Amino acid sequence: MSVDEPIDILVVGLGPAGSRAARAAARTGLRVLGIDRRRKPGQPVQCAEFVPTMLDQSVEGLDAVTRQRVDAMMTYVEDEAPHATTDFRGRMLDRGAFDAALVRAARQAGADCRFGVSAAEIGRDGAVTLTDGTVLRPRLVIGADGPRSNVGAAIGRINREIVETRQIAVPLLRRHDATDIFLSAGIVGGYGWLFPRGDIANVGLGAVHTQRHRLKPLLDVLHRRLAGEGRVGRGILGFTGGSIPAGGMLDPVGALDDVPVLLAGDAAGLTNPITGAGIGPAVMSGTLAGEAAAARLAGDADALQDYAEEIEALFGAANARALMRRRDIMRSHAEGAGPSPDELRAGWIAWPEYWATPDRATTAETTLSRSPR
Ligand SMILES: Cc1cc2nc3c(=O)[nH]c(=O)nc-3n(C[C@H](O)[C@H](O)[C@H](O)COP(=O)(O)OP(=O)(O)OC[C@H]3O[C@@H](n4cnc5c(N)ncnc54)[C@H](O)[C@@H]3O)c2cc1C
Image 1 (cartoon, protein in one colour):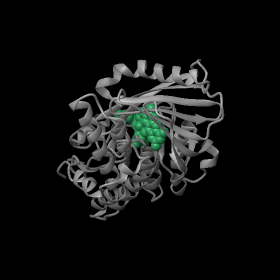
Image 2: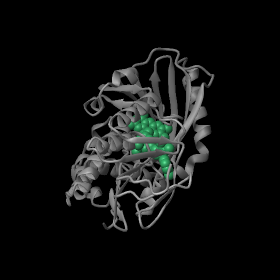
Image 3: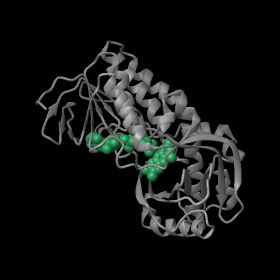
Image 4: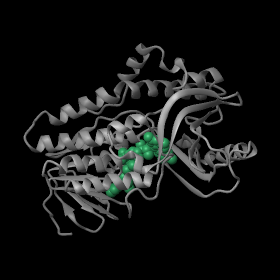
């Protein structure tokens, strides 16, 4: 790679947000470089791999990367019998294959996608030094580099509330066509899950990052319970985990000197603060970021502001509601023994209480962390 390689748009991170951004921008004929510190697209997988069927509207060819479909959600509150949410339809993806397919699509559109190279330093003047020593001076930067985004940090947008996760893959002994959610006051700021993928299940647990030391013992308890019920095997086929931003949306537009910067996906805090679902928002925001970047470089002075407004319109209300519910749950933990079963229900999407009182959701929306532009 040559020093001062001429590029128009640098996309940092080639997960779903970055790949979609690179594809959308490259389609306009601009010189787009995407970089990712991983050695291979989508590997290692750090995901429970569920997406709602709504994603079909944004990504073509999902059947080829789907392991199985689910049509319901079963929610367990403490030791109560499960609550069934029927007509909760989605796909369990092969996330590695999904991410790889998105990278292929970006390359087909003309984006140069490189793996095994990171943005080591992002200068205040917009110059980006890569780990191989190359210095790039892009006309615009898109930060799609995940929950602990370096690009976001360079423009002062930082996900300060992080949920940490631990997940195991275990044999699934009985066919299951639902996603299972386990809510408990013992899991602070998160939940447990069993998501099926054929004859294997992703069993995992997320909790607020200060409780990360409890993830292993809590996951062991959930695994033993499921194995005791004869639903999963005792053997463990694989481990993964990772961080999830849970503090709400960040302002996705900034600048380094005169170089515009856009954030997309987890870097922009778009993951739902209650469910942790972030693949859909990453795909959608990435596409919009790539289009806005290309429009800006073509002379549309409003393109970046329009991007921020579209993101707000698409995700603002849902994200604000989730953030409000999360704050309620965390308040119960701070004030006493933690949330009661009723409070846990009010904090989860399966119950009408979660969706009630839209006026409070609007209030929470105004408290989202927004940095001055
Ligand atoms: C355990 C777990 C389970 C999850 N389960 C689900 C689920 O079932 N459904 C769902 O919708 N969401 C789920 N999520 C969330 C979902 O995975 C994310 O929201 C989604 O991956 C966000 O996509 P992204 O492109 O913004 O970021 P990522 O997918 O995180 O991609 C960011 C990329 O940037 C790269 N990168 C980072 N820093 C640099 C750098 N300095 N230079 C170059 N490259 C860099 C990384 O290597 C990475 O490839 C889960 C998350 C975790 C951790």
